[in-house]
View 1 (cartoon, rainbow, N blue to C red):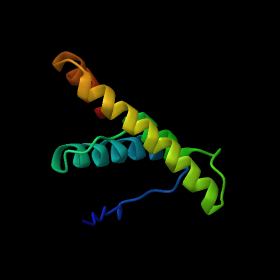
View 2: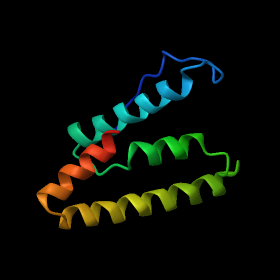
View 3: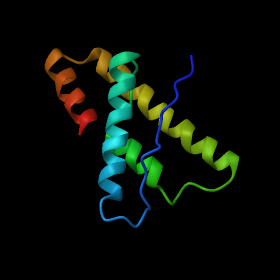
Length: 98
């Protein structure tokens, strides 16, 4: 199944609120996939850091390696979440939404 995310409302990267807007967009994307598709998602902070990273190389291989590391981290978090108590799960969901 394909999901299309419309980002037609954008600002230049030097806009005073650009990073705030991006963080909110990352939070909205996470919330969408977590709630409507019931998927394990990374924290908003992890997604934001991945999007804004200047460390990831420019080649397809470097980008793919970075994605593999990120996916592995999300998978590990999903396993931990499945074993967590209801209280820990609630805490995690709050962390994802920040």
